[in-house]
Image (cartoon, rainbow, N blue to C red; front, side, top):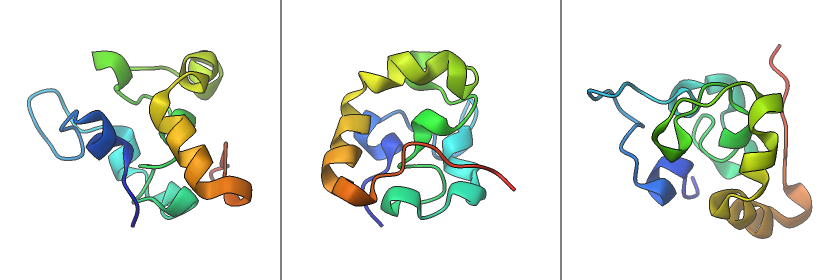
Length: 90
């Protein structure tokens, strides 16, 4: 697997701690998208992530903020034409 958001951001929320676990770390429906573990490389599309130290909302609420995220740009550069910006749950 490639570097996931929790490693890049060094938030520590990929596992249970006093602040709670991030949904990107547990969303198995997004597993392997952009080469990540669970939602770790498509975190901008996972609802309720903990970016910037605060719980984020739905995709529509965070799309503009995440568009400026260094990690998102890193994933997009690494994936090239394979880059997935969104995913749909079944």
